[in-house]
Length: 255
Image (cartoon, rainbow, N blue to C red; front, side, top):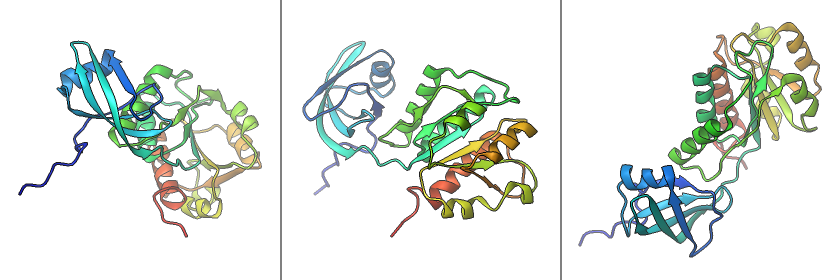
């Protein structure tokens, strides 16, 4: 006798929605989300859709009405509560648009709690398209089955960020100087400093001398080394985040 197919199927599309979800609620979608479900995924009445709201978690829903431009879902059951997110802020200097898009996407996949873009003297950009950034992180979260979205702040200047950094949050500072000047290997520093934490990454041209001095003078800053090679800004952000998650985040088992 063939096995009964699991429900919802693993292939069911996933979407984040604005509405706060609860058992038995109905969710009406239109615009790009309805187009995606109706025209790209070809869902119809009775099909399963997985929805998240960044508040209560992940829910299985069933399509109860599929129109030409809108779709109506009914929640069936909660699959998972909203995930517990490690208390890590990624604080990268703004990069060229395509490179910063990559940082937004991969930081979301890796599980950061907050992304805080910074403006430094050598940045090639000083603005962030908030709507575009939100779209990138939402699509990344949907793709990798996250049940939480990272907070995205508007860019701030480095000096203001350092001034307002909450007391008690360790600031890991990656720089492209010699290994002696940068500090000890990142994993060792991470392991000695439990969350809350923030990782500071410089722009394409690096920090200038005045900025470097300002960071090093901050009482919560700890320099870290990210290996023997000079890394691009986006590579450093991704590598440091992954290393922190494997050392102090939700990639590792703790007693």
